[in-house]
Length: 348
Image (tube, rainbow, N blue to C red):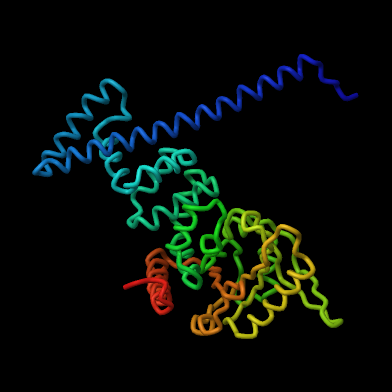
């Protein structure tokens, strides 16, 4: 027999919820204020250090202040941490950006971001972390798996990652330029040599959670082998997802070979059918993602597939050694930059 909650039980549950919510909000407020304090301390020390004529002067000042402050306020203000606060300011010079991010990112998140060499990549990871509410561990994994580089390569077919980041600063609506990657790492599928497209699809379905994590947060699985009937003929879309923040269906086609021009026509057909028969009120136009073993860069660029709402990306079922991975992504980044230069989106 189900127990009926008494008035006292309901009152306790209500009061407990109030206290829990307040504690969560208080912790968030304390974290935000602490992060802003660290930035202010780092900014003041940076001005003092820059005002000195010798590097030795800066080291002396930091060591002196670290000794005095840690004695009074604890180990968090030791010289080692004061130097990190100076690095924090140098990595995030704009206090308004810090103020906004500090409401969603902890100091530990910022510490992970500090070694990232370029401002654009730091801001990308900071924005993605705040948007997706990554834990520190998830942020570290995203950096290790080169999420920025892969997103920058994918976005070079549209407006470029810089423009996407600028848009993200002024609107809460996400842009496709920050959603897709190229390549996608599908090493978790553990596929054997000589696999077929059906093997690839089946492996993805078995590892759907890992696949969605690689796609990125916001993707929700809808259907496999979506049946599309045209002129009495059956067509089957490999995978159908919905992206909650983009508010649109995402059609995914898997191709184990090189990208071909015919793949674009096939995806266009699927997207038009989805737009007519599956798109709900309040949703944006469906978009497509074609995952190929080899991208075929010249064909993709000449076909200008992104103007039709189609992204083409490679997938890798095996991860190369770290040095080879960095080399291949570096070359792809150079090609992406050249692509933006040719289209006049980026200046020399």
